Image (cartoon, rainbow, N blue to C red; front, side, top):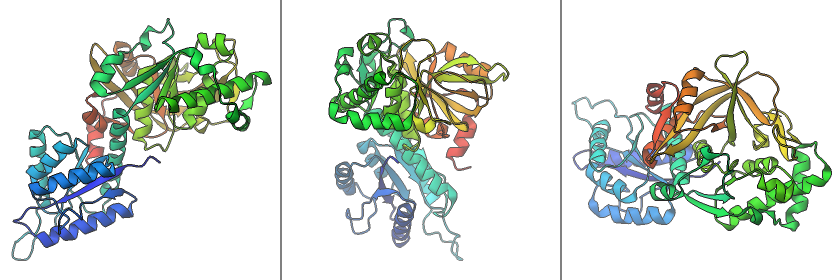
Length: 460
């Protein structure tokens, strides 16, 4: 599972109980460690280990940057000092989790020790004044289920933001001429989001590391039922080795390959199985040089903290019997861990060259997503689906059902989306929805579930 570091920033205000704030600083830190969170605390910043003065900001920033913190938790151990919290958050520029422990029953004489909830109201307003986006986790007890779920959802949001802002994609050749739908604006992606491309020519792919060949051949033999001529298997292995080498050489975390038909002239194979091998490694490789598809794959897997692999798919045809059913399919790039059966290394639907996979994916609940944009505006289409039975197919495929296919179909056609999406066996819709506020794109839910998503994020 992907690892995220959380900067733990408990805060107090002078007119409320400092001893109680210190107490809840410790209790919260202990609870975070208990549920497996990697925290960087501020215990060494001052005697109390609490944020309440401007002089604390610079050493916290220095420590968190040195430690590589990915997001911060502003824990209102009592009311908190809202303007200092906002100054720190603005300086760090990281995702912010705003939370405070639920207040105890007032003392018999009516006095209150913390007023944490009231402080959350104040800090939320000041963060808005500072134009700092933040995630609010409901005012709850440390032992409430909302606490653990909310923290882990926030860590997943941090992972999406971290991944998105540090994306470099290996572009293996130009897009196929016929695929005008997969064109992208390289300069705009860099200017808006710091997403970088590393373009290389097709010929640079043909060099493989012979020392790694035997291990890759063994992996292919173990992972796939081989239904192609044996003399073509080394080309599949060599392509997988070459792509991995080039991803590492150019410092990339994903790739997009032209896939037809210059590659067939060079190697005599389809790249689908080689793509699947890298996808299983957690290095998304997408088809038809779809840069936006590679970005989507990275976001979706990051939202699940790397627990499951994504499936880069075409929306293809409607289900013959189910009015809300649709076939997700591609020539074979889906990872083996997504398959319901052992994949066959075989031939694709529309080409004569070997190197594709055929396997139905596992059923179950899914998230479907697509990052895309045109005319300078970008958004993330997202929603839920579920795997269903349907006719046998070629390639890697899964029939899915959504609540209203006509509504989804119109969303895709009217754009800015295309016929590609990424599916994953997890519900990461709320995490992706929340991550959009930090990366400057609009969430676009294809079902009218925004209020349900917000209720989930509130812990309801």
